Image (cartoon, rainbow, N blue to C red; front, side):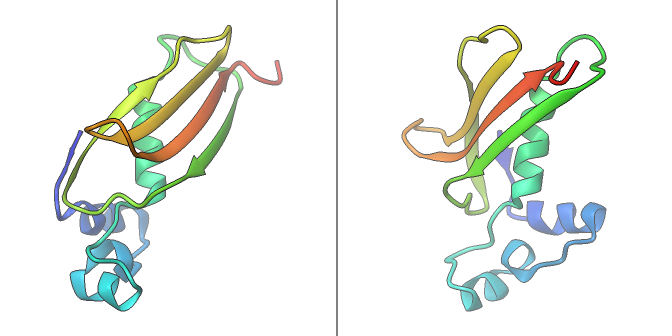
Length: 112
């Protein structure tokens, strides 16, 4: 995915989370980041939307670890492991594939 430099501001308009580390170069620098970073909930939501099952789910379980910030603008890739039954492990990595920004496990139909 190609993430524009304005992603933090656009996500803030939808989410209501105007944290300056996501919306402002100056704000990000004041908090120790070299540039604004993508919001973790945007990253997680985008990853889940990209791998939704073709049928409705009655239940699901999700586990997620945020590893490294995604400095905006950026290009990242969704990596999926082969499904293990209802378990779908995934990562969002930099385009080179050597840095994981987020790691997750989505279990379709958990708790049914």
